[in-house]
Image (tube, rainbow, N blue to C red):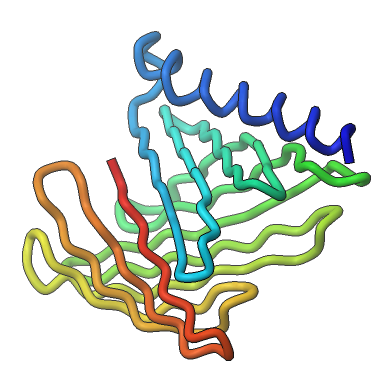
Length: 177
């Protein structure tokens, strides 16, 4: 357990560096921070940064963390594809992931899949932008099943609420900065 805590602390340290150092160094062309919590009290910090054809992603909570980086392929102005590799807090720390992002007019499709020591995970989102600050969508996410999503924005920040009709009736609240 102590070894796991040490690995988590190291990953959290890198996560903090990513959030506070990279944007100031000019590396972060696109950068976002997400704080997600659910009705069971689990809070997860997530950060994503993108510059040109490269991206970096970090996620951390009390029990688990991951950090990986990769390449982005811009197939079309509305379509991009990414593939990355990194580490997670697990006895088999290698983790790999892919994502596809498609955006056209008021619609957006996001698909992501990861695999590694802790197992397979996925997320799929179909989002319709109602106005500049309001979006509605459907979400399918590993561990939660399918859910309904409402996103409300104010300036560059936004709040996203996802209702998952699983056994625990999970409600996930995410804040983006």
